[in-house]
Length: 146
Image 1 (cartoon, rainbow, N blue to C red):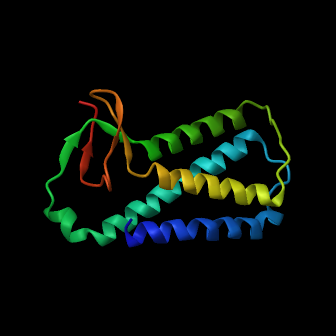
Image 2 (cartoon, rainbow, N blue to C red):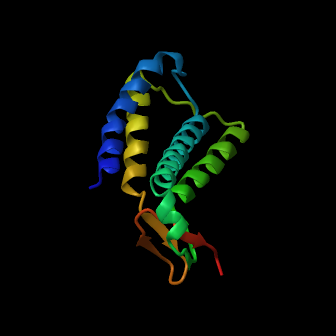
């Protein structure tokens, strides 16, 4: 495990504690669309921050490394985008599907989403053949479907 991965793991409980700290300002009964949207945006934000960190750390390597083509999609991005779409559909449907959310619930949501993001950060959905593949730090892959 790299130093950056250990740091990311250490930041998960800190982010969950921060969520608990601001939970009093968050809704007590959010709708399902709100929760899906919040979780998906958090997952995408985590991936964005990790990618920016990787780009900053590997500027020289990224410039020298020859990118390879692979028909794939980052699983973390795919889940995040699907979650945003599902959240928007629920919000637009007019059905609230509200649920009680205690302060610790927001903290749990943050911890689960960030832990899931960490667990799937190296997975991509490969097209040919259709499978999940492990591609650590998949910044040097040119994503395409052909």
